[in-house]
Length: 360
Image (tube, rainbow, N blue to C red; front, side, top):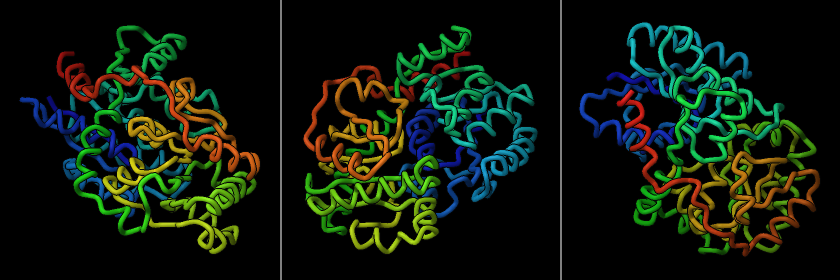
């Protein structure tokens, strides 16, 4: 069996690692990676292939930096000839990025079966580009690999055939178990940054809904700055966020108050997550990693796809309407502890995904 995996963004590299490892251990299966280039600098992509043991991409399309429409169109144009040449049995896509949608569209138009990892997630916010990507991908895909029972129910409500849907568990949990142990041994991030375990807040900000709205961006960074007066706040700075801060003239002001650092490799990021007192983020994946490592999380968005985290008390939603809302939520949630969640599976999602692909 030949399988083409389409990747393009940092979270997809992490999700692909346990699945690629399981695929490589399966006789008669050949995986070919297509890297769209959606995250195109070394800090955001190459380091993940090196650290996570993902096979080097056979194809690198070099697409990135444009609008959603430009990126998706250019990715489609690049993926189609790859699929015509390779003629795989499956195309595998992850998550909710422009790369996800482009890979799915290119495949279905060529009548190649598509499998979608993280199918069924819904924020129910159609203003999010990611929401449109995930809905369209689910309705185009032939195999819907859902991470939670809630995701399965979302797909049922949308009328997708039961035969296409499988609850396999969350590949991010697989990755957290494996790479959490590696990070304990390999990462020196805390020492390099002068941080004490449980002595800082870790923040990540990259969603367009925050970076492209000056009022929300100011609320996030001013709120984090108020917290930083009491507890250090470390923030790996996403390229999109850096550009937004520079455009508004806020970069230097933020650097004076927060510990802004360059994007870090995955093992360093895991170490920073595991040892934080709290994580404040607008990332879907980081919300879950916080739970996997037993760290309370404040989500800087109006909603989350991972409703189980909120219901169980691990995650607190803090829509960044003003700085005090952000700061108050972080202070209130610093030492929160929720109840265990069984929805994410047992750390063997990758094995189940490979079984679903090979037995069809």
